[in-house]
Image (cartoon, rainbow over all chains, first blue to last red; front, top):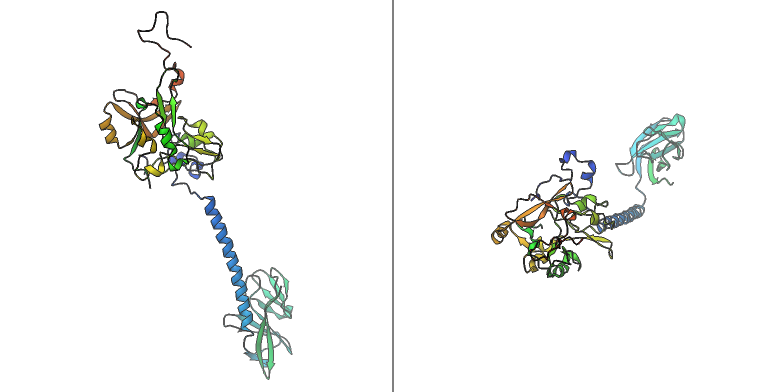
Amino acid sequence: MKAESPEIIAPDSQIPEQQPHWRQEFPIDSPQDDYRSRRDFTKLMVITSFAFVVGQAWIVLLSRLRRARGEPPLKDIAGVDELPVGGSKLFHYPSPGDASLLVRVSEGQFVAYGQKCTHLSCPVIPKPEAQRLHCPCHEGSFDLLTGQPLAGPPRRPLPRISLSVRGNRIYASGVQQGVV
Amino acid sequence: MAVPEANEFFVDPSRCIGCNGCVQACTECDTHKGYSMIQLDYIDQADSPQTVPVVCMHCESPTCAEVCPADAIKRMEDGVVQTARKPRCIACNNCVLACPFGVPKMNTAVHLMMKCDMCYDRTSVGKKPMCASVCPSQALFFGTRDEIERLRPQSRPLNTFKFGAQIIKTKVNIMVPARSTVEHIDVVAALYEPTVGNQLEDSLAPDGIDGDRE
């Protein structure tokens, strides 16, 4: 009979285009009705929350692994005389994907931080004249001497890279993850 | 699974002998949960043994579904209108009041409208509905149009009804005399006519009785 006809038969016998919108929203025909049972919904909720639990466990596992791996090895960054006061140099530490900044603050003081802003990972730009590291994406600012957030959206300090000077060379010797 | 298109339901009330077999058989159907979804109506019990089996007519535009505020009554792709969906039915009785044929029944024990679904578990796999399979006079007949034409040459199937201003086309057919010229059956016409048996037109009626008994 009307089994195959997709048209909606309504009591006012108007064509489907002239039917009110709610008739498409609440179709009488079962195939057009996007039916979700309570059981399906519950199943979705259970699976979703289970996925959250697994995700949390994954995060814990990753941080354990990172801790177990220990300090990264020393890396030669630059010569002491290479940078003028206020100058900066980009290097990669601990892995080749981690851009970091070395800044000569004063004659005898160097600092180094990971370059990723702790807000949304934009690269920060050193502003030694203002004693700050500036993130241009959302106007975030970090203290040049400590890495603590000073202004803008970031709430966590930049990861600080430990430096050691041996002879005439500066070496990166570890990463101190910023703590909230 | 769907009811094969060739298989149709034909109801011929004039053949009904009121045996109640369909009512009993209906409770046996798995989709009815032990409740009988067929009604055996007496037309005028005081004067006539005539009964009418009432199954769902499975309208093309089901009034029960049109009036359902909870979007619970659905029609399958083969045109069979199902019992209200349990998670949606709010037991408001709108469908019970709206149906021109008086088919939906409110099951107050489970707060669910239940109705004849043409024994969907059976018909969708090619079997006959319970009522049609037991009916001894085949007032309820389930089969192809060719079969009914061969078996009932004096009747013809009709599936257009009128309920006030509403024209209803149904999946289930009612058998009418083949020579009748009616195009549709007026569902409520009987409301405005004297009840069956009131007119005593028989010549055996004693003189002075005009048959109007009020």
